[in-house]
Figure 1 (spheres, rainbow, N blue to C red):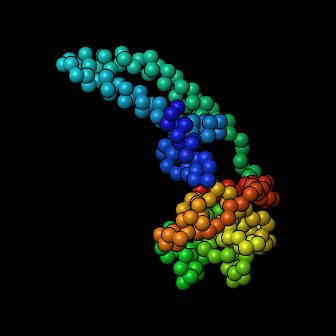
Figure 2: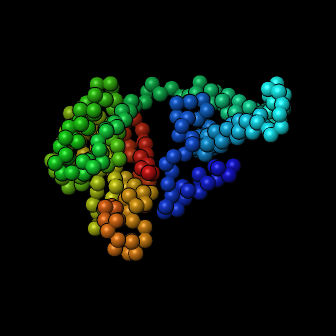
Figure 3: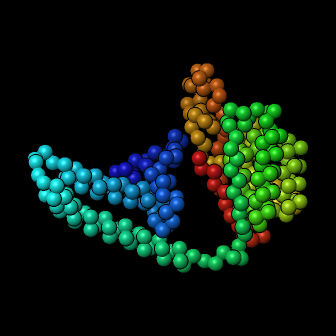
Length: 268
């Protein structure tokens, strides 16, 4: 419980950071991660620490200072944790059964929309160079067309996939619009935006008609990456010159498609 409390604590406030939760390690273990719909990621972290604490307790009792036979050590180790073992197995078992039932009883998504998630692999050192803008767009376009061939109707690009002010760069904006229009797909594109003197890390929904139908501004910015805490005090130090100066959004945005509504949440 203490571990989970500190995971939760470090997610709060302007310096909140949610990378590196223990729960992320279980992303392939579908039955156990279903409890996150109730407990959030912290419930999975709780289970991981719970099981490992039991193992640690058993290991500690297995290596006492006094000399004993291997059988005696094993018997003492099991005996000392048998109540805890039963409780942990009960909790774990209930979570697994609930997760399996949840997976089996999932709704029929056959009438839904197939989503393609694009993840490019571009070095951050060159991503923001102006000369690499067109090669970046070429990569995004190629991967998008591959997703279209697989039947995807909503294509999701990564955060700041387009390292440019999308709405103010007509050639890039027209290229993305044409890509959506010619392939009859929605494109959710991460890009930069400028509004009323402020810069934003934004997400744009490009419709199959080729126009922008909604913009979401990232709410929780990464400290010392997307904004500088204590700006007036720290900006005078050159070590922080490369820190971006984005402003955070204020509201969640619900995007609309012909198959239903959805939200984009750039958290971190």
